[in-house]
Length: 165
Picture (cartoon, rainbow, N blue to C red):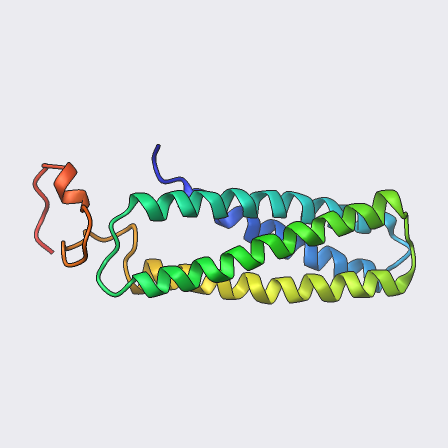
Protein backbone atom coordinates (compact mmCIF):
# COMPACT_ATOMS: atom_id res chain seq x y z
CA UNK A 1 0.00 0.00 0.00
CA UNK A 2 1.43 3.43 -0.87
CA UNK A 3 2.19 5.94 1.86
CA UNK A 4 -1.02 7.95 2.29
CA UNK A 5 0.11 9.77 5.43
CA UNK A 6 1.09 12.98 3.56
CA UNK A 7 -2.40 13.05 2.02
CA UNK A 8 -4.18 12.64 5.35
CA UNK A 9 -2.27 14.88 7.75
CA UNK A 10 -3.85 18.14 6.62
CA UNK A 11 -7.45 17.07 7.27
CA UNK A 12 -7.19 16.89 11.07
CA UNK A 13 -5.30 20.18 11.13
CA UNK A 14 -8.07 21.97 9.26
CA UNK A 15 -11.00 20.27 10.98
CA UNK A 16 -9.66 20.64 14.51
CA UNK A 17 -8.61 24.27 14.12
CA UNK A 18 -12.09 24.91 12.67
CA UNK A 19 -13.62 23.17 15.70
CA UNK A 20 -11.65 25.37 18.11
CA UNK A 21 -12.69 28.51 16.22
CA UNK A 22 -16.34 27.41 16.24
CA UNK A 23 -16.05 26.64 19.96
CA UNK A 24 -14.69 30.12 20.66
CA UNK A 25 -17.49 31.64 18.58
CA UNK A 26 -20.00 29.66 20.65
CA UNK A 27 -18.54 31.13 23.85
CA UNK A 28 -18.86 34.62 22.35
CA UNK A 29 -22.45 33.99 21.14
CA UNK A 30 -23.94 31.29 23.38
CA UNK A 31 -27.43 31.75 21.94
CA UNK A 32 -26.26 30.26 18.62
CA UNK A 33 -26.74 26.54 19.19
CA UNK A 34 -25.84 25.83 15.55
CA UNK A 35 -22.30 26.98 16.25
CA UNK A 36 -22.06 24.56 19.19
CA UNK A 37 -23.35 21.75 16.99
CA UNK A 38 -20.86 22.62 14.24
CA UNK A 39 -18.00 22.60 16.76
CA UNK A 40 -19.07 19.19 18.09
CA UNK A 41 -19.18 17.64 14.64
CA UNK A 42 -15.89 19.28 13.61
CA UNK A 43 -14.26 17.79 16.72
CA UNK A 44 -15.66 14.36 15.82
CA UNK A 45 -14.57 14.51 12.19
CA UNK A 46 -11.20 15.97 13.21
CA UNK A 47 -10.61 13.21 15.76
CA UNK A 48 -11.43 10.54 13.17
CA UNK A 49 -9.13 12.23 10.65
CA UNK A 50 -6.40 12.43 13.32
CA UNK A 51 -6.73 8.69 13.94
CA UNK A 52 -6.45 7.98 10.23
CA UNK A 53 -3.37 10.23 9.98
CA UNK A 54 -1.82 8.68 13.09
CA UNK A 55 -2.26 5.08 11.97
CA UNK A 56 -1.16 5.86 8.42
CA UNK A 57 1.92 7.50 9.93
CA UNK A 58 2.69 4.35 11.89
CA UNK A 59 2.39 2.37 8.68
CA UNK A 60 4.56 4.86 6.79
CA UNK A 61 7.31 4.82 9.43
CA UNK A 62 7.52 1.06 9.15
CA UNK A 63 7.81 1.13 5.37
CA UNK A 64 10.29 3.97 4.86
CA UNK A 65 14.02 3.96 5.23
CA UNK A 66 14.96 6.85 7.49
CA UNK A 67 17.80 9.28 6.82
CA UNK A 68 20.70 9.22 9.27
CA UNK A 69 19.90 11.08 12.47
CA UNK A 70 16.15 11.25 11.93
CA UNK A 71 15.03 8.39 14.19
CA UNK A 72 14.88 10.60 17.28
CA UNK A 73 12.85 13.18 15.38
CA UNK A 74 10.43 10.47 14.23
CA UNK A 75 10.04 9.34 17.83
CA UNK A 76 9.28 12.89 18.98
CA UNK A 77 6.71 13.33 16.23
CA UNK A 78 4.95 10.11 17.18
CA UNK A 79 5.05 11.04 20.87
CA UNK A 80 3.16 14.29 20.20
CA UNK A 81 0.95 12.86 17.45
CA UNK A 82 -0.23 10.04 19.71
CA UNK A 83 -1.09 12.35 22.58
CA UNK A 84 -2.83 14.81 20.28
CA UNK A 85 -4.86 12.09 18.57
CA UNK A 86 -6.13 10.54 21.80
CA UNK A 87 -6.70 13.94 23.41
CA UNK A 88 -9.02 14.92 20.58
CA UNK A 89 -10.69 11.50 20.53
CA UNK A 90 -11.54 12.01 24.20
CA UNK A 91 -12.62 15.63 23.63
CA UNK A 92 -14.85 14.63 20.71
CA UNK A 93 -16.47 11.92 22.86
CA UNK A 94 -16.97 14.43 25.66
CA UNK A 95 -18.53 16.92 23.23
CA UNK A 96 -20.95 14.28 21.92
CA UNK A 97 -22.02 13.55 25.51
CA UNK A 98 -22.44 17.24 26.33
CA UNK A 99 -24.36 17.96 23.14
CA UNK A 100 -26.55 14.87 22.79
CA UNK A 101 -26.78 13.07 26.15
CA UNK A 102 -26.55 15.76 28.83
CA UNK A 103 -27.72 18.53 26.46
CA UNK A 104 -25.90 21.08 28.57
CA UNK A 105 -26.27 24.73 27.61
CA UNK A 106 -24.32 26.08 30.60
CA UNK A 107 -21.77 28.73 29.73
CA UNK A 108 -19.19 27.19 32.09
CA UNK A 109 -19.29 23.95 30.10
CA UNK A 110 -18.77 25.88 26.86
CA UNK A 111 -15.84 27.81 28.34
CA UNK A 112 -14.19 24.63 29.68
CA UNK A 113 -14.69 22.91 26.35
CA UNK A 114 -13.13 25.85 24.53
CA UNK A 115 -10.16 25.84 26.89
CA UNK A 116 -9.73 22.11 26.27
CA UNK A 117 -9.91 22.75 22.53
CA UNK A 118 -7.22 25.43 22.82
CA UNK A 119 -5.04 23.02 24.81
CA UNK A 120 -5.50 20.47 22.05
CA UNK A 121 -4.58 23.11 19.47
CA UNK A 122 -1.23 23.57 21.24
CA UNK A 123 -0.66 19.80 21.11
CA UNK A 124 -1.67 19.83 17.45
CA UNK A 125 0.74 22.64 16.68
CA UNK A 126 3.63 20.82 18.35
CA UNK A 127 2.88 17.54 16.53
CA UNK A 128 2.54 19.35 13.20
CA UNK A 129 5.79 21.24 13.76
CA UNK A 130 7.59 17.97 14.52
CA UNK A 131 6.14 16.41 11.37
CA UNK A 132 7.15 19.39 9.27
CA UNK A 133 10.65 19.17 10.71
CA UNK A 134 10.82 15.53 9.56
CA UNK A 135 9.97 16.49 6.00
CA UNK A 136 11.70 19.84 5.62
CA UNK A 137 14.56 19.35 8.07
CA UNK A 138 15.41 15.69 7.67
CA UNK A 139 13.92 14.97 4.24
CA UNK A 140 11.90 11.98 5.46
CA UNK A 141 9.80 10.67 2.60
CA UNK A 142 11.03 13.22 0.07
CA UNK A 143 14.77 12.72 -0.29
CA UNK A 144 16.72 9.61 -1.37
CA UNK A 145 18.23 7.89 1.64
CA UNK A 146 21.83 6.77 1.90
CA UNK A 147 22.32 3.32 3.37
CA UNK A 148 24.02 4.74 6.48
CA UNK A 149 21.43 3.34 8.88
CA UNK A 150 20.58 -0.35 9.31
CA UNK A 151 17.71 -1.77 7.31
CA UNK A 152 16.76 -1.69 3.67
CA UNK A 153 16.64 1.36 1.45
CA UNK A 154 14.44 2.32 -1.44
CA UNK A 155 17.44 1.91 -3.78
CA UNK A 156 17.58 -1.81 -2.93
CA UNK A 157 14.09 -2.41 -4.24
CA UNK A 158 14.12 0.09 -7.08
CA UNK A 159 16.84 -0.42 -9.71
CA UNK A 160 15.99 2.65 -11.80
CA UNK A 161 18.90 5.05 -12.27
CA UNK A 162 18.68 8.17 -10.12
CA UNK A 163 19.92 11.65 -11.05
CA UNK A 164 22.93 12.90 -9.15
CA UNK A 165 22.08 15.35 -6.33
